[in-house]
Length: 453
Image (cartoon, rainbow, N blue to C red; front, side, top):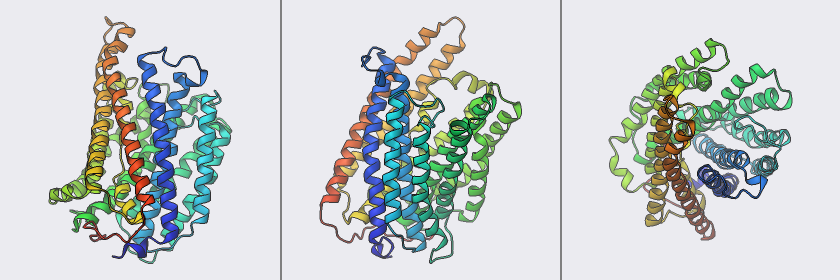
């Protein structure tokens, strides 16, 4: 397969713009997150400015990471996959203009949060005008991506295409609905909590996770050059994943002032998500089992395997949190924060084909370990610290202040891990900068396997 045939200049400019811009937001978001974690440990840290209070800097960090980094990366991967698999051309003008508008919306939204004009709903903290900008910007980026799918030259569909289209259709549905019902024309207060929970779950489960799975379904057979194990049941995994993830959002509301059928539906959906989890694990991890040697030379495959492991672990923890007794103990602790540690291995597969340069072996190896160890430390410290804090909160003989003291060492470890992630992000940005400055050439690597499942 000729990579230059499926990566024309317009597609290259769009994807590189999204990935380069998101790298800057990743660094900014991690700086905000480091300040927020430091303020949890030392409340007097940087207490001289109102915009640096925890109630503002923490949502600014979350929104910078989700809307500035994760979603643009997801859009870039979706564009690249749909163009690669469908052999369809794209015009760069509208998506690049949309991304410029998207960055303006994210910047104004974060400024609004830091200025005290944010909202109280998780992942909807941006002021209403910033949300409107993001909606228009997505239409400029998402519609060309869906057009790639509709005008594809190859009519056979791979699992990667299914998950990419699911994410592209889910975001406007979720975001427009939540903005309309919670920000622009708020519904009665008793109904706002279920809508907010449905939205926040959908951003991770129906927008980001499908893109990660789309990349994994493409990269594993592409890199190792063999068909996926048990691919015939992949459609069942896709439809069950889409259906049950949409109902899973009410799990955090267990014990809250909502109808019992809502939380019951969420708990049932969490259990039924074992169906796609088992099939996806069989398809991807079962295939990787036969090609462990490929991880020695493929950075993309190492990141993909690590991401699949994080996906399976997050699904298992999510299932445990759907048990009422477990949820009641841990839903207000740091356990929930530990589920946000995910990575996209596809970026490390795409960039050499867009820039014409291979990753430097030692550099990308060093970056992989910096990122992986920091992510594992962050997730582990928040998970275990949250468990200890949860047990302390459930003991009537332990004061609330003491429970915070028990969690403090783990939060310190989480802060160090976040600083490690920040160092890894800066290191990655430096590698990317050198790749962009060097003269481009056609890349042929061992990763040019077959895209068929």
